[in-house]
Length: 465
Image 1 (cartoon, helix red, strand yellow):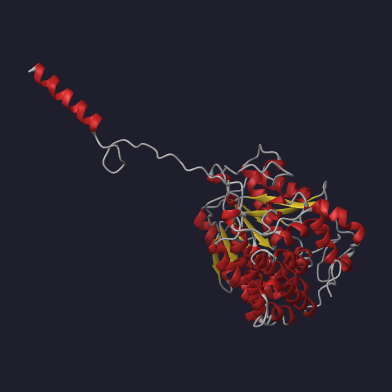
Image 2 (cartoon, one colour; image 1 turned 120 degrees about the horizontal axis):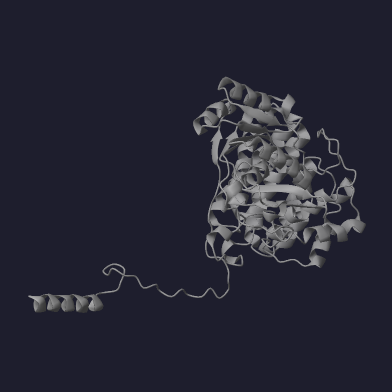
């Protein structure tokens, strides 16, 4: 009997040793060796966007959303100008109707700084909130994202999450509270993205925080909020949409970006142009071409303003995953080094260059420079914006797009280049120095650039017409 059991056990061991080792038939798995990535370029992209809700009057649902989330202590963030306007009133009415307990922070700075971020972060930490609502433009939404992040990670230093090389650029691993974003401008697309931008005063440059983890839970896109926007705010926010679309569509392709991340948590939010972002960018560009001028010139044109509000989100989905490049990289020192310029229609007590304006003023020079790579995309963009390309030569794509953009800006009475907002050739070294740390975006340019190239681009942007 014992001898029989021993024989059976021996046979079973022999069968186990002889068993098929493939994953389909065996009980063990032998890993196939990975092929080396000799170029160290990325091989994948991923899409991350907020949930979006669109419709006239949809703001009235926010109270119900917070109820559904089980929110007990809500932080409402906005700026002092907006507290007097219909969008904030609509949110307050909804919060009151559904008995939502909230505290308001209305000290958001237009074009925020590291200090204004820190002030909002301190408010958020003290409040111990379990949900956030941001009502405003990109400045408000970005400030609220930062407040949510650092309140959820109270032991972190401020520079821990700020983009390298200015900060440490650490990945976000802490869970954040729900954030509902209510955009009141048609430009930043911040309601869809995991990006928060601010002026770093010590270095006099803009930088930011970029992580999918900080994107809003829900973007409430209510076109009624655009009806109170003054003309120049419509224009400058629309220029941001324009450049988001153009830059993300012409960015370095995702599979040419390096280095390839060793862990997916390290894959940047801005990954390079990709097939999904391309769809959103091109659609946003077509909407801008059709509706931006109408939205600026006629505040009663509800169709135009509603479509630009959606275009902002469309472009946000595109650039929030593909990224932007030189127009934005160069815009950060243009904003950060502002001298005395105060734009029309902005009720502020400090000098500022509106973000969309700082971006678009370099666009003719930038796209004339980048069109050497993927000229067909630049020519396609020019055609969407109204250029007749039937007899165009592909090698002229950059000049055609640059001229198309100049005409577009001239028709909308945009300041005549950097000189018109207070800069001169003497400022170019400082502008270049402020652009160099913006590698998160400048390295997404399809054409690499030297310091001399950047100097030439700033010089070409001093005067547009």
